[in-house]
Image (cartoon, rainbow, N blue to C red):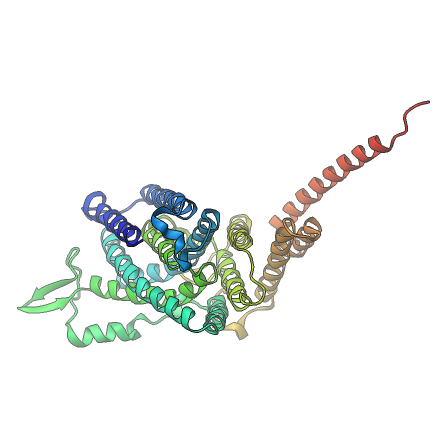
Length: 415
């Protein structure tokens, strides 16, 4: 069994070394096409690893599933890995907002941003592995800890709903203060160096401060995302591997979408919904466990609806680093009636649509509930009215065909 863990660690180290030591050895500005290509590469690698996961559990290689913590079928393991990967990947999108703000605050040159993200993500993998080990220990020792994790996710969802990333004061960060206390900070960047000597004194560059903030911000996001993955799987191998593959692709994803994040203003609502759903799922796990295939459908649908709503909604001018939920507002109390109404309608309507999708594979009037959800969304969003019409037309066509078949079956033959 330990051979599998060693092979995984060797694979990750090899991928990381190839990334920086071969393909990105020289500092350069990463274009959007290049970033999209690398994002695709990391996704393909993750999906290929998911195939390995399937056969590892399905064929019981090296007695893998004989261990109690790995007692899953190949199909169950593959679904849990992919659900966890998709969940961690989606939650990492919010991290991109903060990383973009950090780079903007320090004025990190575009050619040096890859180096900061590389070391930041490498450190994040190590820190998350430690936090995952701690989480596994807590869950195995204390059954009630799942309620704590679930409550933490609900609090995180509420916090994400109203946070404004441009209101985070980076100069007050305790880690930045700690660095300033022990090292003088240079006023200018020195290429890709984190430390330099000025007048015989070792000094930190602004690039190192940016790295410190990227690292600490990921730790804060890990407090949200790691409890979330435990709602999907308790298998330590699947928890760690899905987390690591989602994080390794974050660098390429950042360069692909950071400049366009302000266009996906409803995507944050999807992340809020996903966090809240996973929190509720974890709280109910001991009493009403939700199948992971259903969770995968809900998470994928929530992301799709958020992206679709952002693409099809009327664009508006807004600061790129501001939370998509608010427009020049400082708190929930300052929300205008218009914004509050849009948030409420989107949240309620999306929830009803998701319930309808679940009913398509479980007992219940799924199509009717989906139409109801689209009708609620259609009160505020034009794209929902378009889809409502399409679903109605589709339902009408299906009804006509059913009636035609019924009429033919009940038509009496001529005497």
